[in-house]
Amino acid sequence: MQAGCCYKKFKITQTILFLIFTSSLIFAQDDFKPIDLRSFWDSAHHWRDINDEEKTITPLPDQPTYKRNEITKIADNILLYQKNNGGWPKNYDMTAILTEEQIDALLKSKDDTNTTFDNGSTHAQVNYLAKVYRITKEQKYLHACSKGIEFILSAQYDNGGWPQFYPDTSGYKKYITFNDGAMAGIMLFFQDVVNNKDDYNFLGNELITKINNAYNKGIECIINCQIKDEGKIKAWCQQHDNIDFHPRNARTFEPAAVCSDESVGIIYILMNVKNPGEKIIKSINAAIAWLNKSKIHGIRVETIDAPLENYNFHSTDKDRVVIEDPEAPPIWARYYELGTNRPLFCNRDGKPVYTLAEVHRERRTGYSWYGYSPAEIFKIYPAWQKLWSPDFDALQ
Image (tube, rainbow, N blue to C red; front, side):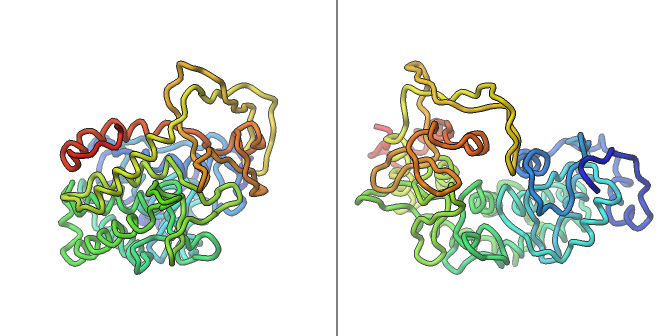
């Protein structure tokens, strides 16, 4: 169905009703407390706001969504999107109320292998299904959750890393990927299981043991990926080589560089390791010290009105400019050049530039080049440092 068509009411067949909405008939929607949906926001934004010809289904204008407490309806959507290999594709809204035509298209695409961990995919769905099963005890959610975990486990490299896509590992898809929380999302979910943050006994001892082993390998991979540049340990790139762990380029505007935002997520994972050894403590302190050294003072990024422009992947009537402001809080570039540690930017031609003004407007408005996330990790570092590194403070 074309995106320009009007949204219409549709009649659900008995088959679709059985496959999709059985649990919704059993439980009234008000019986449930809402489950956090933030891990789905990035994919939902891409589905609704960014043009992508590869979508199996396209959003209708103002396509409605389920309420946050309609957790079984959202979970049934998640089952629809799950591929036969156990994983999920990216850039769809798990909360969208789908038409019969959209449901039919998803059912016919079950054998697709465009499964990925990018933009919250797969690990977010598995995590949500685990929470819904814990509440409802519906076996179909446990089955889909377990199948998704097995898919994640099968995609892990022997060295502990995860690619961006699996089983399609062509091009940069094969690299160990921290960009947009791909590997970090997996590790955070596995960390919850390992630390028994919630009751995951329903997964069974065999699967929990596999998760523990995968998690430990993942921590080792993170340590091995940490960039050693100009004789100093720094932080991490968005993607690392799946063989030798070196920083690697991805898309033309995503260079091999030290990355602030992705590194924050990695540090958070390492800080939540129980009883960290010397390697982990050293890794965290080095990354915090690099972030502290790399903060930028005296500027802020402002979004301003601008003439409407239509690009291949998005349209915008805004622009972004860097403003000098001595009162501005510290800010970080997303990329820092290897060797020089200069803030680094890129256009789609892959050529590096060193100011946001040199980035074409399409990329200025379509990508996050500056951010404040390291300030959040600085807030929780002191308590960790006092407990595990009392003789060394990386912020001093």
